[in-house]
Image (cartoon, rainbow, N blue to C red):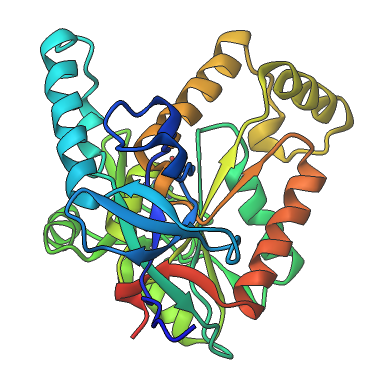
Length: 322
Ligand code: 5GP
């Protein structure tokens, strides 16, 4: 047709079902979508209702979806009501959640030969993100590398400065953290540990794939146009499968030492709760979710996704694509 199509694509950060939306002018005209779907915005003239089509259903008709402004209003309204009713049960890091998650404008980010986006493995403790990271590096240590972390703890005998850690004085590390030089940090037994943005960049600049597996709170600091991280959520399988696979792995010693210890039922349940929490807070930021039931197949999926990263244009925030 002669009509010129808009080039606007967004990633939905929420689920939408027009069938249960009391405000939509006509339910049949609505377009249902899920968080993570890429939507092609066809018309944005109306203040409240946009017209959109799912990116992978190009020939399907366009449907109505709430505009950004309408969805923002709804979120604020729902939040006010929820806060009034359950103020006490609120968890601290609820405030970590991006204030208003609606739509994020995206564009295709093309791979550049020899320049790899950092691969960031996020997951609840114990689910296996560190093990998957180690396996990736073991598979090709020339290509996959993790930055040497910084710490303020004293060096132990047998350790080499710059190998296990970069050892720095506390006041120096405090100042550097305050100056935003660390992409993630944490405190353990009175000492600081962390990964500097500079170490990540130097691995990227060396033409390697930087692989890190930080605490999920690092997502906020990592997700910048400079670093362009590829974010993967390593998810636990359902409880029964989680228990069964870990018990079997222990019997066969397929997991490495850190995960070879036995977990209690409560710890397994905590892993699942914690994964749900990560999903609630940051689910809309992940490029990929990998369920780590059988380690071998989770690792295969990881490898496949890293290959996609090298070979395929992938949707990323349009701010990153310049
Ligand atoms: P260790 O002092 O025995 O070498 O390490 C103790 C703990 O420090 C590790 O188990 C881990 O929890 C933490 N740690 C090590 N490296 C890092 C890092 O780069 N960032 C953060 N946040 N914690 C780390």
